[in-house]
Amino acid sequence: MIGAGRAEREAFILANTRLQRPPHTPELELHLADEVTPIWRMTEEALKEIGLAPPFWAFAWAGGQALARYVLDHPEIVSDRAVIDFASGSGLVGIAAARAGAARVLCADIDSFCEATIGLNAAANGVAVEFTVEDLLNAPAPAWAATILAGDICYEKPVAERVLAWLAAARAAGAEVLIGDPLRSYFPRCGLEPLAEYQVETTTELEDMAVKRAGVWRFP
Image 1 (cartoon, rainbow, N blue to C red):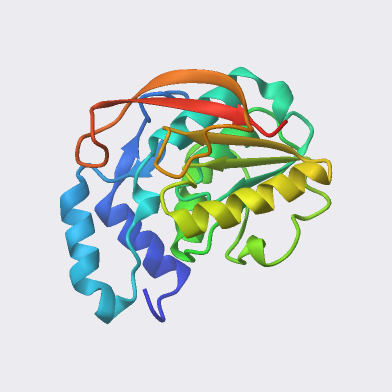
Image 2: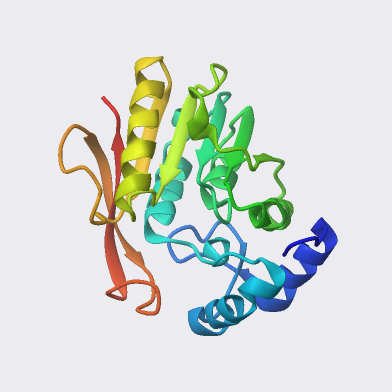
């Protein structure tokens, strides 16, 4: 919301979501919207007035759930490591990394509303994470990042191409890079190493089916 402080943003989140456990990561609780249509319609109607972008932060997307599940089940991926949760949205993946023992977690999203969302969600799960609204794609990945996690970043072609190139460069520089995705249109069909596959419960309000096949891949 244009001009709104963090307290106003938190109040908006609390008024339009409730604490829920994502189906594939029941260990975690997030402030999520019960229904897609009301909050999405409301933000579309109010967009010009309050400057609120579509609330991607209000939902636990299938690729993020898959990646968070993998991190929780394989803590060695992040344990005692500095981690970036790229395009973090609700912060699900970053919070999973913090719960799995990451030494540092930076959640990065260009939607500034995510700062309040992630703050509330991190507190609900008893972890501390950092947040930046900086577009990390404008520079090489920070050298301190040992692991970069990216969930559901292949939904638009220009964004997917830019992010994948950035992640490939980060891998070439030595970072471990994992992607969670339900095989969206612009997900690369080759060049990545598959690590796991899950059947993730979702909703037909968000996806084309009630259960999505989502996987986790590693940059080789």
